[in-house]
Image (cartoon, rainbow, N blue to C red; front, side, top):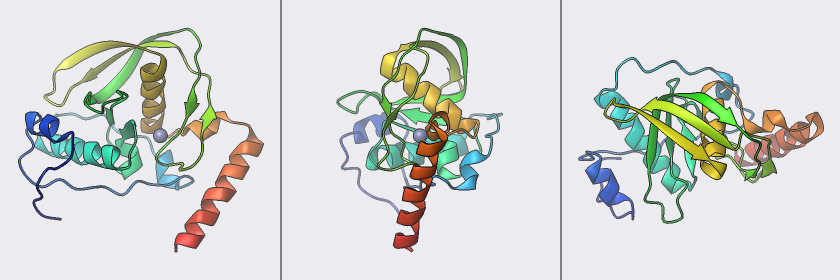
Length: 189
Ligand code: ZN
């Protein structure tokens, strides 16, 4: 690892964010890893350790590339999520201890997951959610999200609770996905 020049398009944003040193890509757990089932704990204090985790998760998400990443997916049991659903990848959102306080409507898009590579399936979600969370400075905020952003928030909070989007699919589909990914894992090793 060690210090590296920031050459990524999102580098500016990370500097605004207080980036000034080492960042690291974290390994993303793959379904059906049992560690994806562990429930994350609330963050008690948003300190430099949490901000370092947020920076690593941000880099890992953009590098993958993905539109959202929960700390559970990098084997950290803390309620931290990073997300960027924008087309130009310059709209990073950080959610610490996110809680959905209102949800309404029905909506579905084909979801994918960095922990379930190569699988895209539609899941029924709320179309609109109101979420409360802390940002990377520990400030509370509330956000009303619709459609893709709302789905992404629900998907990532599920990760913090040990759920994966595959859980919503039929048992047969779940078995197929499990077999496919276990086979990939064996080939990789
Ligand atoms: Zn996911």
